[in-house]
Length: 215
Image (cartoon, rainbow, N blue to C red; front, side):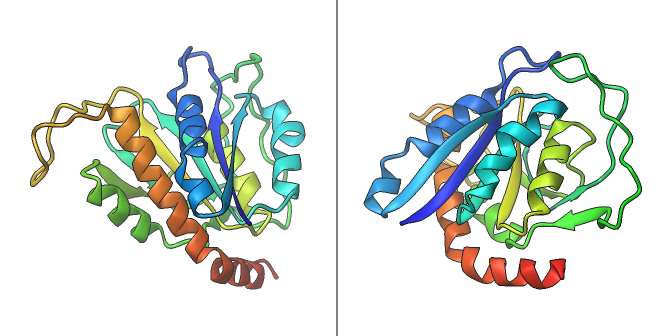
C-alpha cells in the first residue's frame, strides 16, 4: 500500500482560522484513496518554529511515498505551486507562540532546495479543474518555507501548495462553466486529490533523482 502524507497548518497571529488545516483533512478523507489502495494521512502542524522537530520530523521519518504540503498565502489571488524552498527566514513576524525565527547558521546545506516532482504537471492538473493557479519560486520567509525546506532536506518527493486566503469561487475563468454546484473548498479538495495521485505516480523516479542530488 502506498502512503501519502497531507499537511496543513494551524492558526497564527494574522490567521485565526487557517483553511489549510480543513483542506488537508478533507483531501486525506477522500474515499478515492481506499479504492486505489492508498493510505492518506492528514497532519496539521502547529504554526511555530519550535514544534517542527517534534511534530513534523517523526512523520517524515516514517518515509511516506509522497508528501503534499498545503499552506495559505494571504495576499495571493491564485493557487501557488512552490517548486523550491530557501534557507532564508524573516525575523520580523512571530509565530503562534510569539517567537521569531532565528537567523540560519552557516552550514554546508545548500541555501535552495527544489522539489524533485514535476510542478508543471500539478499546474496543469489544477487548471483542468478550472482553478486559478501558477508556478511560484518564492515560498515566503515564514513557517511554510521553513517547513518545506526542512522536508525537502529528507529527499522525499514533496510538493508545497499555497492556497488563497479569500478566493472568489463565483468568478469564472475563461472557458469555465458559469454554473457551479460545488463549493470552492470541495472543488479544491477534489483537485488536490488528483494532484496527490499524480505525485504518487511520479514518486519512485523522483526519489531516485532526489537521492542523487543530495549526494
